[in-house]
Image (cartoon, rainbow, N blue to C red; front, side, top):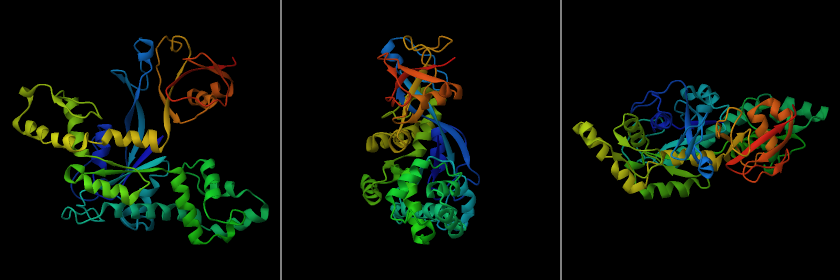
Length: 398
């Protein structure tokens, strides 16, 4: 799974990316600091089932801290997009192509209204962040419609004459966008287009299909960044303007400062916490002490920096993922080496048992016999949907 971090220049995308990943992507208060995509790994939280066993887990791919598993998530931070990106403005074609494999987008906007459409600093409150959401949607729709529309009429007529399925025709044209066939089928059902005669589609039909397809296959969340420079009324106004797209207020600068300070042992802070504590005031310089004190109003006003909640709302809410724990011993929840709950996987909610087997190893999926629920010890069939936080053993033919 990969999440694209998108938005216009100078809204804090790279700062948010750095806070999530603790990498050092270039940051600066001017447009186009990022000129190539940054890729990294963040993590989302889920309660670790080892607490039910009373036996410590042995994490492999996802660390466990105080009974909380941190499951990895891939991110790609693309350079700032500007109006006209689908036409190539601001190297838009290149930047949009970097998003092809993304399962969904976190759009970062400037809640303070202090950057114009090109990312230049302007007086706070003079720009409407809802406009950023609208034009990026238009750019994404135009981008997908353009991919779809290249020599569309001629190929669509061939599909009709030769009796091919329109779903297969569209899937072939959209290869590389990581759009599941089920989303294409659902979009054909829900969009107001002539399913039987794609050659009759106008440019407006293709745009309408693209908009519905993006809604169905590439969920979006708005990270209303720089909330520490804005009011709660501004956040509420943005939520109302872009509904039903969810909005999470974020203070990426504050989160990055705290994560770095925590890594250095200066503060006690875990991502998502409602506050922080200085561990050893004597180690702080006066400037560091002032900087940390300056972050406390963020928690007073907003409850948290919003950075970790934004990612988790995207993964568990918008993308509908859940965590499962495959094991080889359903009684002790161990693998063949005796490690307790070594792996935690993010899968779509309702994923059936055989699909989890394939996720572990292709051979397990192909030789699948049954799964066994680690809590109830019931046998589960190939198509049985697993529950969130399931512990499951896969039984396969030898």
